[in-house]
Image 1 (cartoon, rainbow, N blue to C red):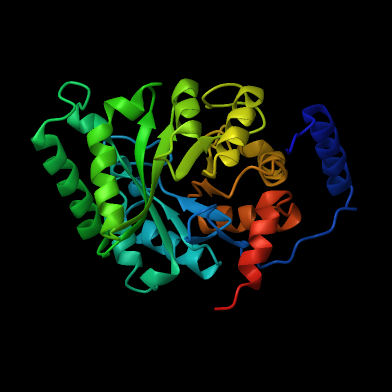
Image 2: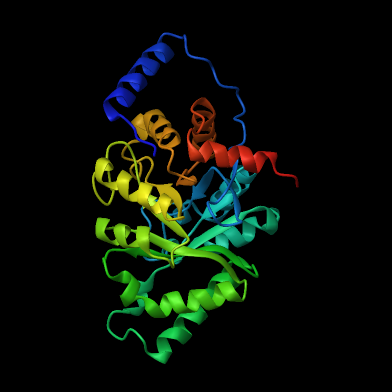
Length: 313
């Protein structure tokens, strides 16, 4: 099992920062290398090690990304693609599906992995958990997602922002419909994003979950618990065959001044199949890619990346 000594980690990071300040650190190339290709855990979905998140300060079907405006966000998708990012992270709550649809006019759909999320709170599922209307509503929602993005299938669909330890019983209709969609090959993998540590624990053991989108960074900012509390849960999830994608790597922007430490931590954690970062400009994308190049992934993530790179086309 991977473990990390946070005191040693932070000490090593401080030393690296001193070297960089005095000009001894290796200078990265001007154009960043593409992120490593990886296979998403036990799924057969190829994605890039880092994905473009589109939900910074997201809510009410808008986010900082959608507020950029149509032209800027579509251009951001295209820049990410040109830099080798093949993983786009969206959600109904962010209102970014149509922007991706436009970007896919010049990006081959089969070359990218699309993750989106159902904001089940629109439907108040805990009030009438198993009504036939609920199943129809969920099917219609998934169909709407495909229409908005103009795609025959969705790579990953998550139940968004779970906060209850019993979500696996409360959201049974959603799980049943998503299972139907998987059987029809209109959804390739299912899972959850969590906003409570008990919900995260349930996800780590749920046989239904393929993918967990987990909040993780070295300071515990905007996470489900402290870093030391969350890491063992993610380790258990990996042991149980779950794919883990990290989010809030920069603490929703609050750790931007320490982004090098954030990337080093995520890359050396050895528990993340991939991560999603909500860059708002092309320069921010390039900066993240430079840091990924500076701090290569270690542990199982690196082994997966090497296997994916070595696989024949």
